[in-house]
Amino acid sequence: VGGGSGAVQDAQVRLDLARSQFDRNQQLQRQGAISENELDTFRQQVRSAEAALAQAQASAEETRQRLVDLRNTPEPEAIAQVAARLEQARGQLQATQVRLEDTRIRAPFAGVITQKFATEGAFVTPTTSASDASSATSTAIVALASGLEILAEVPEADIEQITVGQRVEVEADAFPGEVFAGRVRLIAPEAIERQNVTLFQVRIELETGKDILLSNMNVSVAFIGEQLNDALVVPTVAVVTQNGETGVLVQGENRIRFRPVTLGSQVGEQIQILEGVEAGERVFVDLPPGQQLENIQF
Image: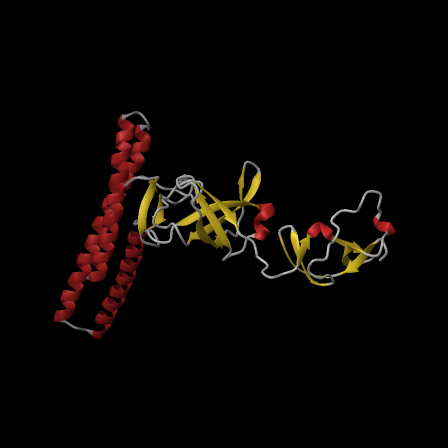
């Protein structure tokens, strides 16, 4: 009986949907937006749904009556048949409940709706436009109640310098002079294109400023690179390669000399020297006027 009522519920949901579609399109027909023939299509859908509901109700009544009869004459074979039909009806009920759940749109987290792109009763299809930063089937943008994030777009040429967990400094137009801290939480695996420029979206989780920064505020971000503490560094332009060997140019006795070095990490326009020169030694970033690299002693 419970399974039969599930089929009835499924048929009732379909009938309600058909009637709702017919009512909306009837208003459109009265306004001249669609033809009478197009309206007949929705009218026929209502009739079909009414017939399906009547059939489901009759089937449910038949199942109920059979159960009543079985109580009076409990035959094992008949009981097995009804049990099988009952199990089938339960499956139909479960499928109906799944479809019913699909009609409800839920966010995967608690939050506040900040933008709305559809109203109750509106049709949402895979081609329905929502927003640039959301999928086509989204009907609203929900801001996290806790853990406010910043969505940044980084050019393809710079994305290799961005890593998950990297420190970020954030400045907001609404709070001039204040710098807020954040970290890279996610780098989108797929690129987007804006005005023929390939970009990657980067999500930044705020560590400070959550209590005063609000959704849709204009902000600028600075990604903080790796820092070398207590390291000997030289400008990257000071490093030269000759005959497959890497080194720097230092002042020798009355001439410039090539000094082989062992390089470490590079941060921006500086590179770490692990071996080859001492702190305080001067290296050349440009050759003196008239000096050629070929004339330097290696």
